Image (cartoon, rainbow, N blue to C red; front, side):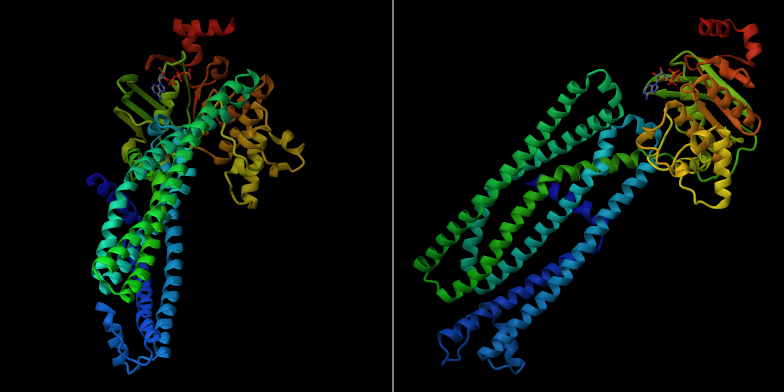
Length: 595
Ligand SMILES: Nc1ncnc2c1ncn2[C@@H]1O[C@H](COP(=O)(O)OP(=O)(O)OP(=O)(O)O)[C@@H](O)[C@H]1O
């Protein structure tokens, strides 16, 4: 019972934190609708009396609701059939108006709630630290931000509908108690006894709901991997085997969904027969054993009919809520994890790189595994520096530190002498260009891909054309029917590897970055294009700071400095010629490449 209450309280707090006082406005409106409905229904009793005994104007039997009759008398309304019908209609008209307001407010609140969640999730994802991101499950992120949000919408809807029905049950029960307390008490006892039956159904529904959410997270992960590895899976014939994993996952999720559906079917089909049996037994007791009067029982029954309908609805909505409550728990945990995964935000904004980037005694670990060890490095503005070393020596990690993606465990990253911890990293990263082996291509036009959705002003078009020329994309672009408005397709599916890289290079040239990272950037280019790009980069030599991660040592001949990394440490550095002369390791690397 305690955990039952705790669970529901947790959910209420979750909703309250996002809706605040609005929750109570919604509840207040529902309550008012219920009360007006009760008043309207209560008018049936004097109506019954008039019908039974129209000559005799002795109207009583409303129990504690007699004040309604008194109110009419005070307003000088004689208790005629017309007046009673008029007052009753008035109550129902008012109820209709409030019902409308309540429904409109509920729609507004739902939109408000879902929008707040979507905005908060996308903001939190934007400011999530890179380290947390690489340790997280992409399937879960995808599933939570899309499918799960829709389920949360359903959870919200059913939770408040159930809540509303509870309010109505309380209102109708109170009216029934006012009219005939003994009868009401007997029915309630029966109601409480049956609710024990439902506890088990609720519990199983909740368990299955959590399993559906976990299954969906896994399923989304599998889909994402299938899409990104589609070519490999297809060309190797592994796709059928991989598809079997998807099918297993689908079977699991749908098995749980079927269980939830079956439980719902059991719950809703036994509900009415049970309730009718209770009411019948209680009527018999009331009339046969306790000598109750039929008139008051009829009005009580009217309220009970309303209360029982509300109870049936409440149980249906509550079961609906439980069927998606796993999503709500998942969302709560996900939001908490996202909060913990936020990058630390310095305040100082950077407008350009003025002098240098310095690493002082830098150490970075993954768990307890030291990847970069007490490394010292100074990169001067507008110099070109290359990182070389065997696979796994820490080149990419080092670049990730320099770009502020990975915070150091020890030591300092200084940008123009300022510790990166006090810098607003986003302002620094806005000055960085990054060209990787797998360039980021968006399913949009060439213009938008390169300018990152800039307006087509004459100035921007000029900059775009210059970038296109420098990246040697002009011949390709001119041959296209839609020119710069050509859509590139998902992940640049319509492009060759070399074209993708040239688009990526053009984007960074357009951006006019202060620091350009080339991570094996020319790997997918043919020799001629590579030569052209190299000359483009050479053009940039001295105009911006360039860091190159290259396996092909021929591409870094013109770098000002080459840093040789081994197991996260700098083991040598110097110009190409310099290292050729004195570094056996470098000579060995060159020799291996010439083979
Ligand atoms: N997310 C991670 N969790 C744990 N260890 C990691 C993670 N990412 C990288 N590493 C480890 O850090 C070390 C350095 O990796 P890094 O990618 O920097 O090497 P690299 O020199 O760029 O290699 P390559 O030339 O193959 O790309 C490797 O031992 C790698 O296993």
